[in-house]
Amino acid sequence: MLKPPMPSYFELISQLQSLDQRLNWFSNRVKMQTFFPPQVAFYGQQQKSLQFFS
Image: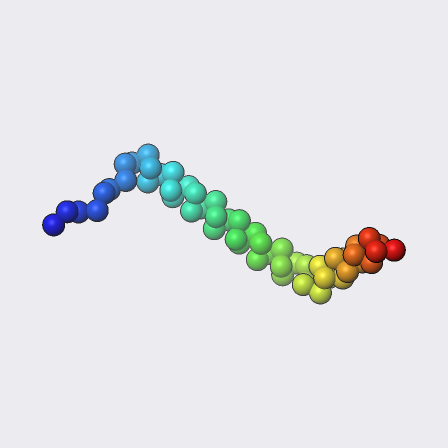
């Protein structure tokens, strides 16, 4: 039976760095959501849409 291909060292490092960047991005998004409640974001969007239609 054939074994699945193993990534090279450089591919593995690249994938780990990419994973680290994604995890940092998601953790920053969670921090922003706790800093700005969704209601505040909706209020800002609602005000912009009202100005657009005026």
